[in-house]
Amino acid sequence: MDVIFDLKSLREKIYFWKKDGLSISFVPTMGNLHAGHLSLISGASEKADKTVVSIFVNPIQFGHGEDYEKYPSTLDHDLSKLSDESVDMVFAPNLNELYPGGIESDTRVTIPALSETLCGEFRPGHFSGVATVVMKLFNNVQPDFAFFGEKDFQQILVIRRMVEDLLLPIEVVSMPIVREIDGLAMSSRNSYLSEFERACSVEIYSVLVQAAEALKEGFKSINEIENQSVSSLVQKGFEVEYCSVRHSTDLAVPAVDNKSLVILIAAWLGDTRLIDNIRVNLA
Ligand code: PAF
Image 1: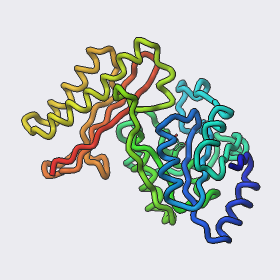
Image 2: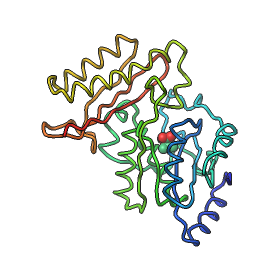
Image 3: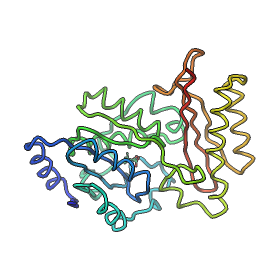
């Protein structure tokens, strides 16, 4: 496994792989790797000849006052985990490598509409920050396949839209959420939870499961289901940003005949923001 920190060496390596006709899978990450990332890597390595993982905590996707400063940076630990996986190259650039002109006046990629709803409403500029760094990485890694986890459901739709609109020859592959035994979706941010908060955190998934059941039964309106879910979370001590039933392909508020739905939640437990979702097919 090669560990590369600069664009020049990355480009050289990619050039020779492409010249040899090898296909490339890419897993972009912000490090602090857990089983969710490892499942992306395992999917990625099955799909192409070469697998590249990037590790970069991207400042421009964090808003003012968010957790950029405290986001866990665990490169040595991550590299030792990755050395047991089928990974051919890790790209771990520093800030200057990806933002040579600084981050303030850098060119941004913006995906309208999809970026403005749900998480986008509460984290203005977040998805533009994600799309910009992913585009920079795509331009240099030149993958055939790019892997993302479904916990960040909205992120996947934003990236898919970017790939479609900017005509990138990349297949975006989404992988199912990996959960702890009690149902909590794996996330680097789970490490912020106190023992008490960790115990309460399982409520998000159980609320999602109950809401999905209620949707399938069809006796309650979407509004009722959303309100009931919010009340259950508030009772358990969450501060809820949103709990929303949406159409799964464009996150629009569902029309009566929409069958492919997703229920999405973002909620704070103390100082930790958690997100999760569940797909519901009514067909
Ligand atoms: O999902 C993440 O970890 C990040 O948003 C990503 C895609 C690596 C971009 O920084």
